[in-house]
Each structure stands twice: as C-alpha cells, then as structure tokens.
Amino acid sequence: MNDRTTNTPVAPPAPAPGSGKLPVPCRLGDYEIVQKLGEGGMGAVYRARQLSLDREVALKVMSAHV
Image (tube, rainbow, N blue to C red; front, side):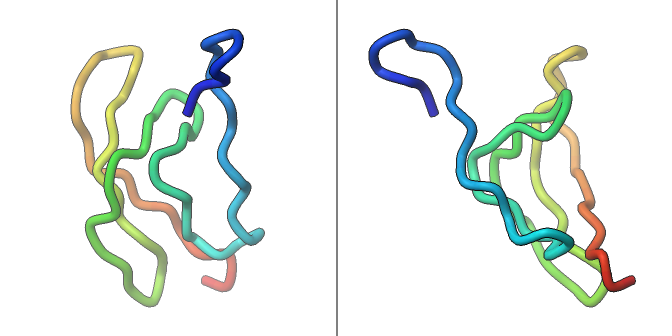
C-alpha cells in the first residue's frame, strides 16, 4: 500500500493483538507478507518475501494464546 501523494509505504490496519492473523499484503520487519497459506491451532503460515535477501519464504506467525 502506498500513499498516492508521496509514494511512501503506508501501514495497513494492525491485526488484533495476539490473534496470529495479519492483513494481506503488509510488512512484518524484513518480510513482506504476500498470501496466507494456512491456519491452525498454534498460528498462521504466510507466503512472504524476505526483502534483505530477495527470496520467497514461508513465515509462521504464532498466536498469543499458545
């Protein structure tokens, strides 16, 4: 998501604290979340791009209740 006037990245709405769910697309540190792959009892798995190494990875985000 970009601000149309400055072309700078704009953060999407934050997920509920500890929900393990992220809005897609969004940035999480060095990772750009691309797509949700699955979800289970311990968290969710996303397809992401690690920006510093320019590679595609699977990223697991743990739920806070675990």
